[in-house]
Length: 312
Image (cartoon, rainbow, N blue to C red; front, side, top):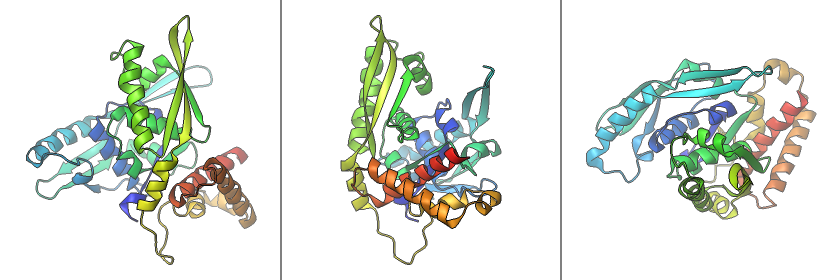
């Protein structure tokens, strides 16, 4: 599969998790996720060209920077917060990478996820988010990438509402930009501008206030037709007889691979076709009739999972 067609698939819990990744670390993380065989039983050692992550870097200091980045990556943790039905809160801390390696002159970064990351990256059949790595790697602000993932998670709903303080916590900004004006101009507006220019989706938003104090943010999610059309034109056209490996190229096949043997046994071919047709129709409506093959099929898969989860 061409690099431009690689798809990132993450559990929604992972997207909501707290982390301290820098922009480069986020890019490495996403690029590694995009290369995963999501049906595998364990994590292999993976390789990515560092030039894909550190574009326009000064080659004289690249090795030093990668040394620092890999040191940070093996120390990085995500914090997954959950709340039980009885209100009991749980904070789970997980190391992301067990190993990172870079050898000067080869230009290849090797890394391996820890086994504890399995529930968030492998065998996902519900409550996950898909997006193209091509789009993600275009973004230059770490806040833009986090907001992008948040919006992709709720793209089918068309909006996201979040208390201002939770939004700060999501981005790790509890101690930064204490004045809302600065948060708005330095983070929200910059992300809005960047996604409008580079993302397959963009957002508008409304600030809800109580006694003049900003208390909630309401994001409205929109399809970015100009970027989607440009992306479709830039992607290579697959050979008619070539097998499709990515979920964005064969949503029905990818959907079936996520099901258990028991679920497959209970799913008739007719029902599978009905789910596919319903999901495809929803994707077409969401795209307002402007067909983009790669993104349409990516969205169709997402809707198929939503329909299936609703039936369970």
